Amino acid sequence: MKKISFKITITCFFYFLSLIYSTFLMNGCCMITSCGCGRVETSTSFFKVKGLKGNVNPYIVGTQANINNLSINLSVEYDFYSKLHSNYNGAFLMACSPGQNPTLSKEKLTNLTIKSNAKFSSNFDANVNLSNTVQIYTIDSVEGSNSSMGSFFSNIPSYLQTNPTSPFQLKLRFNEAPTTDKIHIFTISYEESNGNIYTFTTPEITFP
Image (cartoon, rainbow, N blue to C red):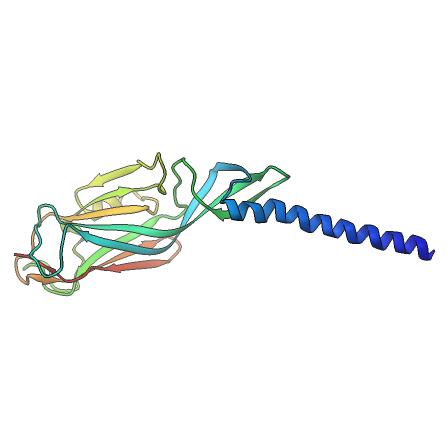
């Protein structure tokens, strides 16, 4: 009986080790090589927003902005997820690097506002939404060789009426220059259908 029990214990021990080893091959390897250990199922791929970053271009703080070519460029900070079919066995969802195919967010962009800390014109006081005065161009898919799924709208409300997915990149341009205060700091708020809100605040911009 003792010999049989010992053999069962040894068998279970080596079986347990094999499970750990196969798990490392399937998961650890892929984490190191960013989805390089199997086939990514692009139909289940998506990105999840975790932040918003941007810049004002072309503009140097302290100079006067040219309204005709000034743009506020935004892009999301994100995690990419995909179902990975392992070369060893099974399929699982994991965070990794995007592939070559366009990949959209699962969320919708429910609101996008832009406000200034100063009075923009006789129609727009400080801290009032300026979205009607702003053109918007978006790239919807995560970066990659085929990430050209974009759209252009003459103002933000027109864009939001299309019930868009959360975009990967945005470019905002003003339809008109401020006519009252000449120095502005703009805050853009990006709100998703899951309730998450991300903001970006520009440096101080001086207009002629």
